[in-house]
Image (cartoon, rainbow, N blue to C red; front, side):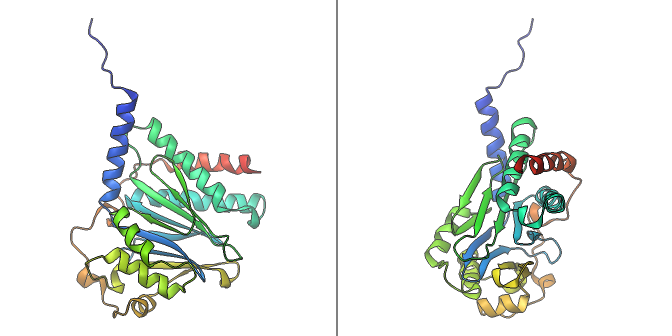
Length: 267
């Protein structure tokens, strides 16, 4: 009688974590930071059509790095969750904390029970009406939630970029100043133009709908470089996160089920 194939659970978890981290590290990085005007989100992204940064609800933004098709399905599921909760209760009941917890459950379930983990890290940001109460939730591939006080760096060479950005970041600085510091941290020894930078701000002064994308001209003015045509300089070997999404590897209905369950649990 042959012995059944056996792998220690610790080794399985380690292999899945290594697989997810390698996939995420191949992508380009993203920075989120508190500033005087609200919360700035900035990413290196040569694609003019695929977005890493998006609006979820009135005062909440979503950002993701890693495999585009995977974190975009999480984004869609988050929008559905927020819309359902806001419709069922009230718009004020939709908050980043409950959304981050729901994302953590979905990612943790996939990491534990599925053969392949999601190669993503995501961020949920909520700007408060008053300065000093903004929230940044960094959610890892295994469902771990990190409550970041003033800044977060996701994907790519995150540790090195975080060190550079921490030295230059001032939470009381303007959006333009924090954007310039973020682009400098992402660039390192390189030069990044406005055409490869995606940026948005949750502006607390905008009223109910706080999310606003920054134009190439605004980014160029902040970093002191003219905007160029992205089609001329986009690399041919863009990483997986910037390619058109292949056939979905995540069952968005399963994610929706977790998020919808969370609506009932929160209230």
